[in-house]
Image (tube, rainbow, N blue to C red; front, side, top):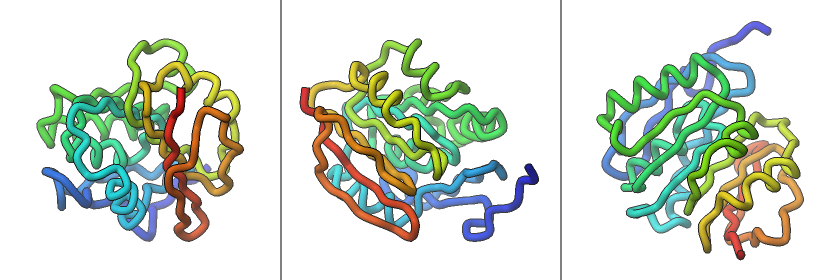
Length: 188
């Protein structure tokens, strides 16, 4: 499959809040990579209250890293970013060094299921923005449940939102273009 330049963003997005506000993230040409739009990121972090001090965050389908770096910019204690596209992961690692975040942002090159099966961290916020037509939600939810701290939030963005498990309650929701998004709260 030929990879083309992302026309809307010219392969870069801007961090829209926190201490890294205005810094630019470049990203690779990758099939199905579509960074979360700035207005959606602003809305999400307004819903979350802007300050993520003390929170552990997982950006499971990192891609450009926009969501994970927004969390780091807002003082998240630790941010784990996971993606299975090696060139994207390499760029994420470069941004971690460039923004001097090596003490609290961790990058791994794995698919989402492998990461959830083999890592022991638990999270206060999980950011899920998989490829647009991805639909393996049921398997993901089974693996994700034990990774959530009490009262954790889970953000989902997709072309078609999945049926949520009974332990996730919609807190806020919205739509932007062809994407729909939900911020859900974990009830243990």
